[in-house]
Length: 341
Image (tube, rainbow, N blue to C red):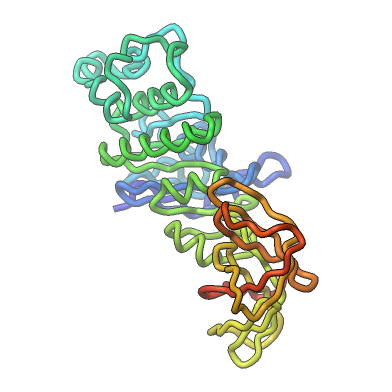
């Protein structure tokens, strides 16, 4: 059963079309990440689902209940059974952790709320319940904000870039804790993010948005390994798009030849990920190291092959020097787009 169905949702602000016919479904218990650059419509989509703003057209159905029909809100936010966690958490500074978590619950619900269990579910010590927000780290504050949203037992949790203000290591740990808690409660979640690593590592399904539209939906591996468009290919991870020509079911490029199916003869764009490109003494293609980006555990080489740049990922302790001549080969299949970019 689906927890959320969004059908043909549109929303404009003056001449700017923030949502241009969005269709999206989240299954029961699923974590779906909406991934895209700033200004693509992610937050507008989230806020419309939450009921903070109307649409211009389209439907939003929560469970079996239409909450927005023909762009008009039919159910108030407080009656939609959704939890919402904003980017900064927005804890009340004058309330302690326990009071923050139970804020918005009625008296009977407060008595039943197991604050310690919620805190433990999010990897927090139950003794933090009497602390004030300013006594917590940024990651702890965000986990408390999630606990507050989960305290109402929502069927759907909406997360609006909740980890973006945290440093890298804290962001990763907090994200994992939140997803574990969501799964433990049986809720579904919609995570809005511009961070590709966050989307790929935390979500069951990734929906990529561009200019108000969902351009691809699929499992993280599917979206990464088989991008539907050049935009998805370049936004979700990195890679090289090279001109190629298909003749008789084979795409020929400067990095080699690749069998393809279902493609007519002609000029296309060939896309390969950096990890597919290997330094190989027996490789048939010669390249020059034009530079590299060093990350410690690995590095991304910028290789010149003729007039084209090819990215190649290597271990951090195996980085050849700039200007060095190397030979390369390519593992796996390449993605073909209809025309070169």
